[in-house]
Structures are given as structure tokens and as C-alpha cells.
Length: 119
Image 1 (cartoon, rainbow, N blue to C red):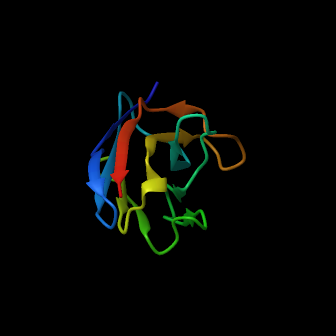
Image 2 (image 1 turned 90 degrees about the vertical axis):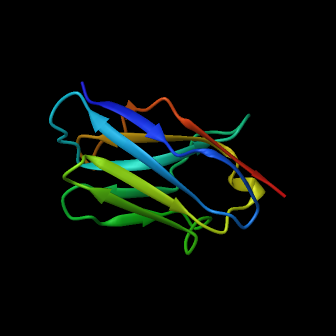
């Protein structure tokens, strides 16, 4: 079982930046894709950025296009989420997740890291 450990969360003011990281460990990572899913209180967990492991193809939700950037380090089995121009509505627990194929749902989750953006 691959374990996912997020880091990099914190508190910033609106307009600030944070960089989240998700490290996969425990066995050779062979997932097809990794994604970031924020979850605010009372709201569903929805993907805002994803990346395919081999080709590096990226996906962004409209709400974060131009502000967030996802990247992967295949040597370190790590995915990063660079978050710029943060807004109070970005406040959430951010979970990273993997899936073994782009044809199936994300099914392996990290423990989450809190991001708080104040106005």
C-alpha cells in the first residue's frame, strides 16, 4: 500500500502563496495520476488540480486556473501544488490522492493539510 503524506499547509493572507507537497512512500509508486482535493467544512471534496504520472499532463479546475500549478518529481515520488494569489475561499483541508488508472476514481488518500487564507 502506497502511503501519501502531505505537507506545506499553513495560514496566509489573501494574495499570498503556499506550496503543498505530497510524498508517496511504502512501495514503488505505480499510480497513473495524482490530484489535489480541497474540502471546506460542509462541502464536498472536489479536485482542483491533477497530473498524470508518466506524461505529466495536467488538469485544473476553473476556479484555480492561472493561480495554481501542479508538478511532479518522478525521482522523489512527490507531487507539488504551488498556490499563488490565494483567496479566502481557498481555505480548506487539502488532500492528495492517487489512482491506478485514469479510468477509475481516486482511491488512495493522504491525511490532509490545512490551508487557511485570511482577508
